[in-house]
Length: 135
Image (cartoon, rainbow, N blue to C red; front, side):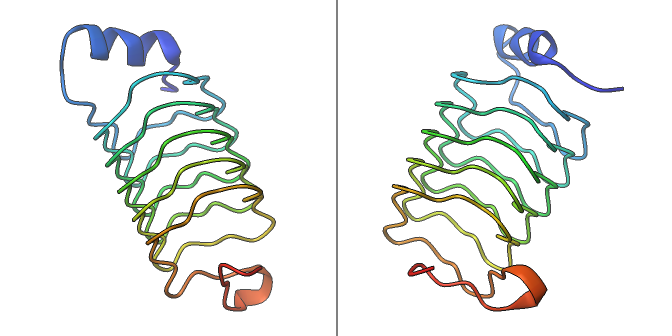
């Protein structure tokens, strides 16, 4: 079952911690929501929108987020390790101290993103080439 914005908002209203590990949120519009600390590990987030959302400390470990839009989102202290972020938009996103260990960044747009203190060890681009903050 694919979850939508209304499903996530209902969880937030009940005050439950967002445990969305492994869930299908493909193409969900979660723009502007406060999703700090949410668990999206192993989730299917292809084409989802997190524009200007608060994702401080959120977990995206091994999530598939190809084509997702994180424009202007606050991902400070988020764990995006081994996530597939290919063709995702992270323009003007705040990634301070974020963990991008081993993530896939092929075609990812990071224009104006704040990567201060981010761990990009093992992050790769097209063909498995190492990615660096200067790319």
